[in-house]
Amino acid sequence: MNVLIAGAGPTGLTLGIDLARRGIAVRVIDKATAFFDGSRGDGLQPRTLEVFEDLGVVDEVLQKGHPMPPIKIYVGGRLVDERRMAPTLEPTPDVPYPNGSMLGQSRTEAILRDKLAEYGVRVELGTAITGFSQTADAVTAELSTGEALTADYLVGADGGSSFVRKHLGIAFVGTTDESIRMLLGDVAADGVDHEYGHWFGAADNPMSGIVMTPLSGGDQFQFGAPLDGEDADTSLEALQELVDKFAGEGTAKLRNLTWSTVWRPNVRLAEKFRVGRVFIAGDAAHVHPPTGGQGLNTGVQDAYNLGWKLADGRAEVLASYEIERRANAQRVLGISEDLMQKHVDGDESALERGENTRQLDISYRDPSDTRPLVSGDRAPDAPVIDAEGNKTRLFELLRGPHETLLRFAPTTPASQPHTVDITAPEAFAIYHAQPGDEILVRPDGHLA
Image 1 (spheres, rainbow, N blue to C red):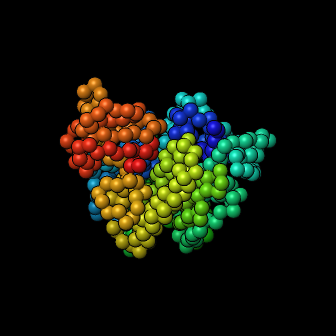
Image 2: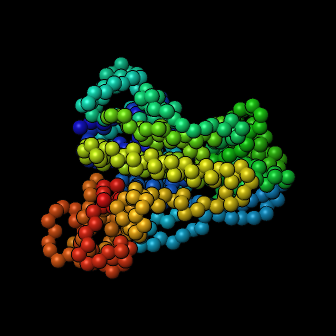
Image 3: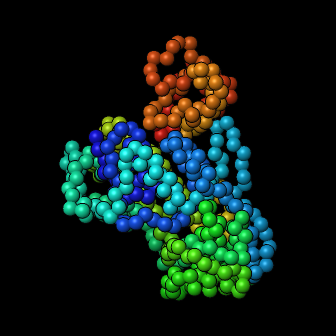
């Protein structure tokens, strides 16, 4: 089997890794001629860190990133408060990564590209998909290089302006709010403590201002500042004027602007995530406002859900991708929109991230089933004892591109590979299990 992935952002790279580790031939192409060099999606949620543990990159991600820093709140140039976007939580046996990690998107992508390269797959830059057709058995794609490629499946992970989605004729339903425009980018700032985030609010409207969040691996900040009227100047000088306006002249001297863009609230959801042998994922299927930090993370979850299903190939399994992921994307878009509206309305609670942004509550369960842990739910971590009698974590034993059968206090020998026999009492409690119970965990870490 072979799969063509259009788009080498976090979604396409995650899917490429998941397929390659299964021994599936995969090509990852991108129309860009150079790798993206900016922070953009810089917040990695706890569930994404669990995916990255399974893919073998979480240690590097955590080492190169940093926790969400405290934010100093200034109003009219005066320090009035210091707060955190979310409380810092301690790991528990079922949740090993309770807190997110801040890492600029370009650095996350570099880590994922390196992991993909370990499987002998390298991103092909300057290679766009220019057309495709499909039969019941294959997809034939035309590339900008002049190559005609036949693949078993095509996945469009090619962003909000996705060629793949448009070529399929899938409607992208939603809105773009032209009344709100922000200047976003990465810049270094002298005179501003890099150990903190900073909110510089206007004296007459504290919720209107500029935010600067420190980026790991240097002295840059990711900034977000409002734009008035039709002005779309993304230069260092324009940004300096905005900082002087909200923080006060002389507060910060900006330099080394490496990335900037004009952003508008864009909230859209594709009507379909699949047509035949062609799938869409990530921003090609749903675009989010940045509030709550959901966009990149939802794309990673799309890829993690789709990879094992492409490898499985059964019709009912492939059909479940759209069913599961579109419903989840719709739910997450609602969370992001609600937080965005609170911010626009001047509600300071918009700064507080709730439990539902961590994506640990992703579930594909039947909504009518109210039991505490059922089919479709995320399989929690738990303390277990391995076959050699050593104490370890369940996630360590689940790692890999396979499903795993959990047997609680079994009385017979295991008859299939990837079986974990569980005797630790804490694991029984976490899984609401009784002796003799068996629970199958899907390759994407959800209960089957």
